[in-house]
Length: 182
Image (tube, rainbow, N blue to C red; front, side):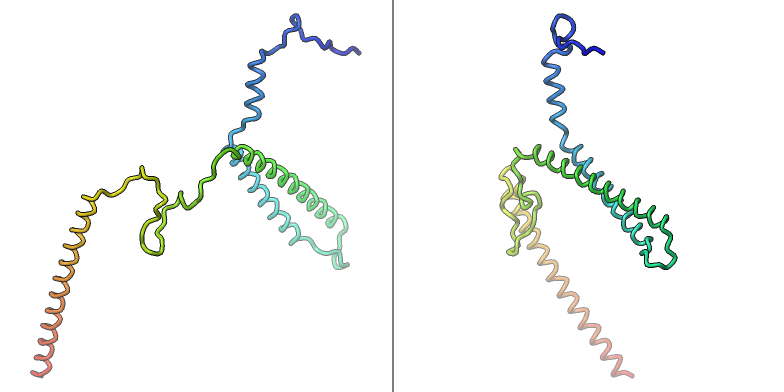
């Protein structure tokens, strides 16, 4: 039995150019973070499934207390339980690796606080002012138009309230007259 020579074939030149080797190494290191997250999600789903199977096995497993004790069945179920637990620990290790790789990929990113991502109304009724200046703001003309529409709406509501009061009084008088007549 002979060992292959340490010198690469074709006169000492490597089989792949150095750029191609570097690109392959770069591709192996730079894994897409979103695909890692998807893989992590699938791993979490597998963990949940295995955990449910473990609880199912535990629920169906009888204690060896002497009542209808079948050692073969008990050993079989115990073996399945140990296999599920072993697979569960493997899945948790995979999940830890995915988490570490995602954290490594996202280490250079500046975290954005959730308050800037989700618009909310503060207690005093004004909107959160941490929004960027480039976002759409209502111009003074639009604000003036809105104020005018609100003013007209209040006037119309006031007129409707007066009409409803007049109708209520009229109905009251009609009912009073009918009550007196009978």
